[in-house]
Image 1: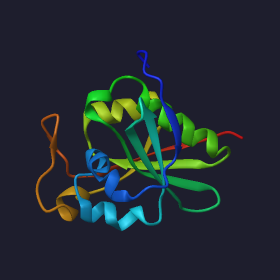
Image 2: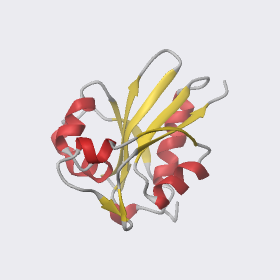
Image 3: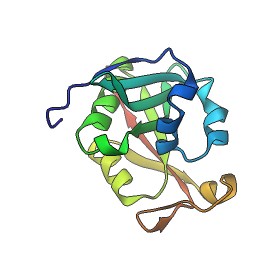
Length: 153
């Protein structure tokens, strides 16, 4: 992690304290509001500062969904997101993890490099559910791409 020591734990503070970080992973407070109350939120802390957040929803006994995984922009590409995923995976042996993301090339590469495979897509999700176009890496986000990974016990 490039000399970046982080600790990860369940977050018990107010959502308003991490909203700016949640917005890195999901640009809409209204969309965040739809899932945050049913989520368990984890944070990564480095030098007494929250540098990453992960919101997880238990969909069933066998499946969890990562609703939001975000790393503070100045702390990206240091292995923190990968560490957050590994932490969540360790907590959920034998389960399937699903997550949805846009068609951003670097994001899809990241999840695929962590062992996640595309399972399906929701056509028009971003254009239908967000009030303005979202463009990342010169890509207009339209479809929600779901990826999944089944964890062994």
